[in-house]
Length: 292
Ligand SMILES: Nc1ncnc2c1ncn2[C@@H]1O[C@H](COP(=O)(O)OP(=O)(O)OP(=O)(O)O)[C@@H](O)[C@H]1O
Image 1 (cartoon, rainbow, N blue to C red):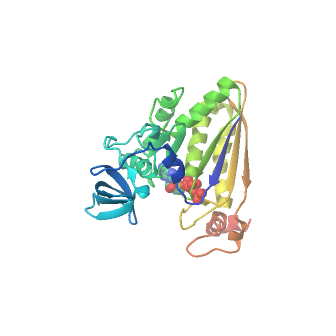
Image 2 (cartoon, helix red, strand yellow):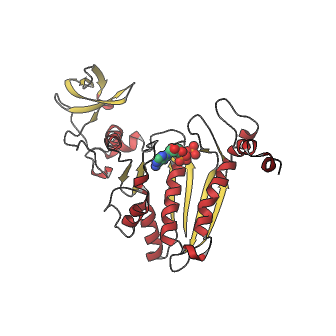
Image 3 (cartoon, rainbow, N blue to C red):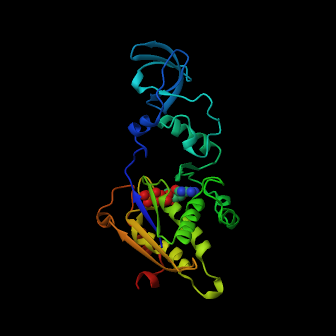
């Protein structure tokens, strides 16, 4: 059995600063060291230490600005980090917030929206369609490939879970987490699409379970999704998707459990947000459907 759980989170950088600091090797700051300092406009900016005066560090930023910051607020920068980033952040010399963000940004600039941190997949929402990433050719490539062998991808996560389930005979779960609009719903659909590909039955066998699960999404979204300031199709409920497989690894059943629907939205919506899609669909439907 495979389950997915989508959990909306408040906006927060996933890996806490403290935790990351612990992972960074101790560094000595000296004149000439390359560092990251916090910036009110662009979050983090890199620069070079030009003066060390006890706890006070003077940094010449790449923007040309000179700042004085406390040594505890300065993070070392890896001068040898590849400009195209790394596909697994455990390869970074420093695993602190600016280094992680810089790596994600470098990859994003090259249309690489997925990055691993060990066996965790980080997805950066591209806010545009990238169909070549998800076609059947791509699914065929990930089928049976060792985790980490190909570029980071939700298909690799789904494939690893599927194979663990088949080989070890133990149920697997995939947790999809992120702030509103991060791409949880899209990622979950991709995972389901891949599992339907792996465990699906031939079209000749009639309307299959995986088809029914994928087709249930628009209905669930009509009643549980709404436009918010962060996302035009925001899920206002948590979702627990369970997919059951038979011994041969073919999908035999599925269950979708929903919880914590934001019920107050039905009677109270603040502009420019909207009520649940189903109400607008009913109003837009031809009279014979809406009077049904
Ligand atoms: N991998 C992707 N490729 C292209 N567009 C994406 C991708 N992921 C997300 N998007 C875009 O971002 C929008 C928001 O994503 P999604 O609805 O999955 O967010 P969410 O995390 O489920 O948000 P919420 O918690 O509000 O429901 C999608 O409607 C889609 O337009």
